[in-house]
Image 1 (cartoon, helix red, strand yellow):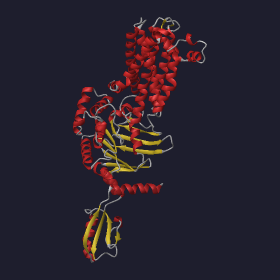
Image 2 (cartoon, chains in turn cyan, yellow; image 1 turned 180 degrees about the horizontal axis):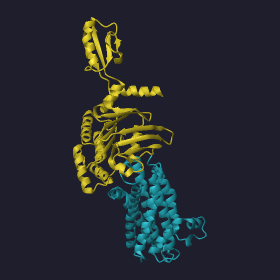
Image 3 (cartoon, chains in turn yellow, green; image 1 turned 60 degrees about the horizontal axis):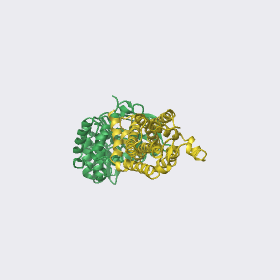
Image 4 (tube, one colour; image 1 turned 90 degrees about the horizontal axis):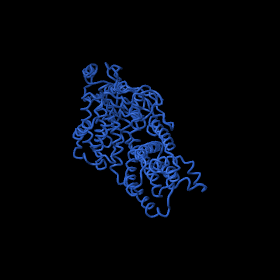
Length: 253
Length: 311
């Protein structure tokens, strides 16, 4: 376990030592979003699903910050280690492929959750809403972080260059998150093509809905559906990450 | 006795079709200082990467102290310290000391022990004053020393060094040689690949010559040299010889080169002493005797050329 812990510590040190680049910017961005939607636009937008608009977007912004950070950390860390060649160190050590994979994924989860915690605290301080079940939110976010840290690990192994991570982030994750009910409810876009179709068939809509259900007294979202979707994706992506490490995809010739 | 390293009919064909290893078989005895020599592209680095688990053999296997390097890689890796040719140091955010401490951790060494081991190696390799620096601030020689220290941090039984002195100046080269000799004297097996054949000749007690993915010849360094290219003795006489003198056995392959007699053998060989004593009785006197010792470089080139001709 010492080897696993050391690699995990290395992966955490990687983003903590550079926290002005890794932790601060996403937190500041979300706080700005909340200020704009809460103070500037909020009063004009009224309520959505029975809660003020700023409160409605809060779970989505929290989800977005956890997703992006949990994804980027393993993706960039693995790519950078492959690029620099220092992936040689853990690979030539007695660490098993499973240990390496889990250490990388776990560190990604920690980054996502650290940013998530800061965003949650900032959001709650600004909006002061009635939090339905903070423990359920925490558990749910751990699962969300696991899904996207595992996906980041898969992408970090799969990609051949820096542009691969950006492509997945900009063209797949960002649109899915943005069109996944972060900024509007299903009801708001009913009959507005193609948004109504995109939001309905987007798996992240269910995931965001589940998180919203742990935080706000809203209608139209289901925690159970969110948990099933998130749990299923966690199993899928974590298995993919473990298998790719075991095979040594882009690690062994 | 189980060898430190065993390569058994190892084949590796890369995805692009390059055949790097074509049935390489070799045993590296425990405690030996072994040189793996070959031209560029001979398969040396592929062979090392197969031990490190970075290359999946197409067929055959590698064993480290009897552990299969693919199936039992965790046990195998625990015994190995590898210093790759390309200096790979995790220096983007770790300082010199932490590079060693983290690497010790990967091998399961507790933090306190890793700290003291790192400090010991920093002093051994004259890097103590640089312990808080970033890798980017180190000179090329310091990076090479750190690369070696990293391979040693978990006190491995088998040390694999891929071109450890490439680009090192004379002083650093001698310093690395002394350290490697000391480690070998402590009982560690050292497998060295190098382009500097003089380096292999100075350090290794056994060598293998790898050419186009196969071991062309291996064995004790001096036996290999003498069986491939024996020492020659050149005898100049006055007057110069016109024919091979009597008493010169054909087994010593006598030839005349511009009146000088060239024979295979060493000065202390009986037949040579008798030959030298007999020359005055054959109407000629010995003017000079010079010994031409074969070098590893000549032996290496002979074997590589011979292997090319056989293909």
